[in-house]
Image 1 (cartoon, helix red, strand yellow):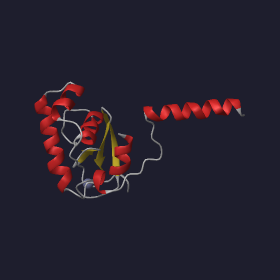
Image 2: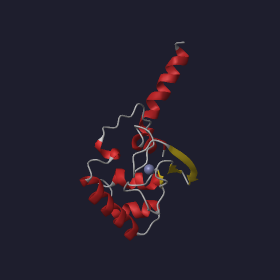
Image 3: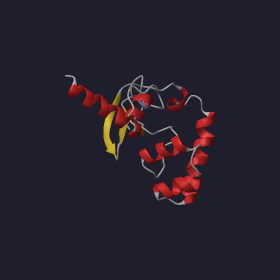
Image 4: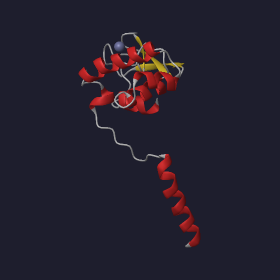
Length: 137
Ligand SMILES: [Zn+2]
């Protein structure tokens, strides 16, 4: 959610209606922050105007589905996450239709660089380095 917020609000949290940067925090709903606009009074959240708005699944699971959309089947994803096939299917359909077309979406239009990534396959290399460090301080 922090990463999402960083992308979504890269130029500051602003009102989706009037673009005002004068906003107030209105607490959190789950991991989503809520805001209200001091200029026009509209209420919005981190998810307002994104494909992730008004979905029942947690952000983590939605990202997981999104990332695995092309390499795992709907059946597999529904089994892994313990959701109905229909739920995953509808979400996947939604992602495909919306994210593919809306190139203005900050989530997928910008290039995302990851500084560090940990994978279980890389663990061995890390340990080897640590052990060799002990032998040769
Ligand atoms: Zn506003």
